[in-house]
Image (cartoon, rainbow, N blue to C red; front, side, top):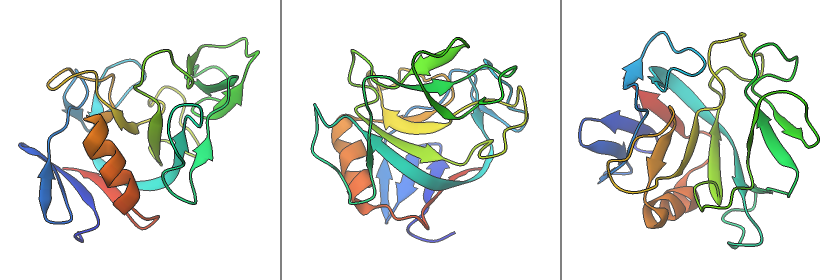
Amino acid sequence: MTPDDLVLTPKGVRFQGLIWPCTIGKGGVSKRKQEGDGATPRGVHRIVGMLYRPDRIAKPTDWAKPIGPIDLWSDDPSDEDYNMMVRAPYPHSHERLRRADPLYDLVILTDWNWPYAVKGRGSAIFIHQYRRPGYPTEGCVAFSRTHLHEIARRIRFRTRLIVP
């Protein structure tokens, strides 16, 4: 572990010498993550990208990519594009990346079950904004808007999310 790793602890995520309050999946932490279980997967997850809503926020880093109106994330284990960013129209189960609420205004992507997804092992473990303190996610790690934006400015491609 390095100070640039995001390390989940019982009090939040330790990152660069600070503890950042966060929420995790409603299913807790699991070493056997499956699609739809609401769990945050145990392991070391590399940061592989960042997405943002250019109509709502400024570009957070030079390597962030904009979320467009037709951008989606496939969560259908039966589809060949499972756990990949796809575009509408898309006939399979998916999650909209351009949401009405602010949860995905800024999304940090991890390499959980990506780029070669194992069917049913779970899609997309994002780092994103939480609804409110203590409100669990569907398996992602979430922070307050202020903390998420500060973390986004500080992370690099070498940063990892470590879930013990």
